[in-house]
Image (cartoon, rainbow, N blue to C red; front, side, top):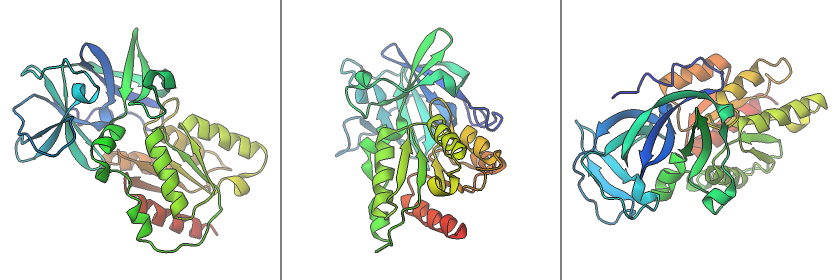
Length: 305
């Protein structure tokens, strides 16, 4: 079941998403179709020693070696026993192919990001829960999992690396205001810390595009654009308003369109790059390349001086 053409063909900037629903232990979960490469019947997995407990091992469909993550095990479902009836959701993001074991795939629904709410902290027991959103899909509530956080926790070396900033050497302090929309609490904190290490000391973090857009509208109403918004960085996947919708709103606004805008996302593919360019994004970068992000920020801000 290939999904390569789904999701990416949505009209740009409409604030819609296609969610693939699947089950683990009879509970309904979801993943952005743009992250899904294909669905495969589960297959025997070669065990790999000294890995995270949720990593089953590797398997090789065709000529590609793929790491398999046992999603039920990661979610703490100790009673789960793998079955040959299980499915592998093969994902592609952050330039990696990873298989997640699930029980069933229910289908795909197209909904508005406005129908996805940020989960309450009480659901996760901490500020860094595994759910990035709760979606209202018809009569069903679907838990959207934070797959980037799952991978970053299992394999920290695949996430944002502070060493990339350290390799840049001493940098002058830059207090120009940077506005950043990122819904993952873990990645938001890591980006904030990395930019602080890069001596960008005036960053404001927003949990989704809508929150950042509301700030921009406030800044514009007070005639403070130059003083309070030097550059915008946005993820693509976010509840309430996604990064493409935010980009469209910014670049369609006569007063705001001059602000440099960078899309920083795990979903930057050739198709997504076309979307972002059509919407007017100044640059589009793939997570977790934080060193590249800082270099591009330096360039765009220098250009605007």
